[in-house]
Image (cartoon, rainbow, N blue to C red):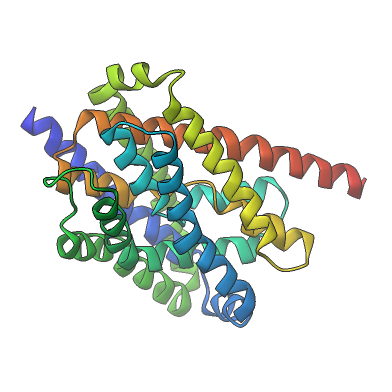
Length: 289
């Protein structure tokens, strides 16, 4: 089992690094500058992602009285904005992809530093037990090393050698997608009984509810343009799973119950976000036609 756990952690690290490298390879300094110049929009998105999002996740877990493993999974995931899948939802909805993609990677990069303190603050306030906490300094170092550094490297490579960045980006995107499937499969194999036990439970209701609420808030707290509203809405429901999985590995020794809850919540986020994006994209196509 120790070898299996070690292999899972190695694949997890590869997934996180290649995901952020891909984001960096696909982001130009001009794109960053164009979006960051919209100070009001950026401020609203960051407040939504880093303040409102974790508070709603925490409040829902508290309101529904979730068990500690599911409670922790909710806190960890909703403290992790900036999921790469968010950009795919924006693309599916035919919304403002450049704005959505830049804001997504910006949240992922900032989240490398804010995730551990935010989640640990909520866990402490929730009083889940004396032995339930996060090693904040270790997590900040680990997540920053695995997320922030690869992203910066990717952006610089894109700036200096765009052709190489395109070539490398295609490779890292493929590796990221494959390792994400391995991470999900590993989490399911190690906790499939816990996932089955969650079917029909309040955890799934909580995940679906918060996902829908975050889409609505992302829409409301945005710019006036409809395409931009859908971009800021659809980057909010899905979580950047890498830091959450890393936290479970470092702080909770890959606890199967927490991994099972995280896996179930991630799937619900996709099940809420993808149909919404598809409906919006279809509607926009019909209107254009």
